[in-house]
Image 1: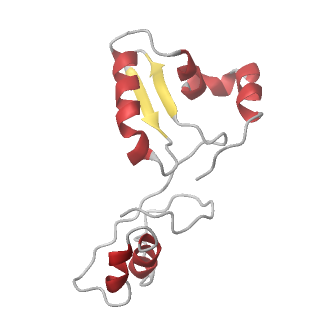
Image 2: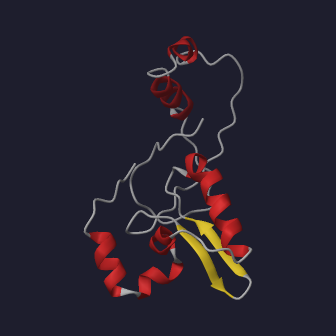
Image 3: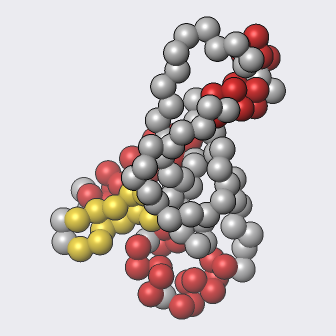
Amino acid sequence: MGWAYNQQQEQPQWDIFADDEFVSVVLKGASRFIPAISAYADEIPTSVTHFAGYYTRTDDNLPVMGELEQGLYVSGAFAGYGTMAGCASGELMAEIITKQQPPEYLKYFSPDRFENAALLDEILQYPSGQL
């Protein structure tokens, strides 16, 4: 399970994340929508390995998808909703890489949007939708 446990912005670190409460917090949180999990929240029956990662995001909370330069592509900054957006982003990236006509809304995800003041103004007039 993935869970946005630490919601404070921080600089990436390579140190191993160590929090003995993490698994219990995740299980208790998940038990709200999967009630049977609550039986395991206080006494975890087997050893659990916790792999930590970062929820990377842009200031406008939109993913970055597109071509950076000839033959170099990016699809990232999914801010914690990558699992939900994975299939759609794969389809969009396939359209970009195979030079098909991508949908008009893809401009909002373009890496170039940060250099387009008018587009950024349009994007920033809407709520970020932070998860």
